Length: 83
Image (tube, rainbow, N blue to C red):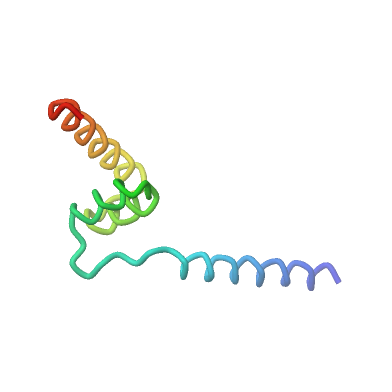
């Protein structure tokens, strides 16, 4: 009986992962920094990190650092333009 419950949990977990993956936005075929910046402007930091990883071929830590750098760059640009 315990094995059946374990197998049921595994099946449920796999189904969850498949459904969650299908709901994530797919990167455009012509993915660029502009797409990543647009995702950030729309408040979608997770998508921006995912797309940064795809575009630059880096891991999660490097992608988060890259996104933080883009955000800092945007913030300093806003300050110099008086926004």
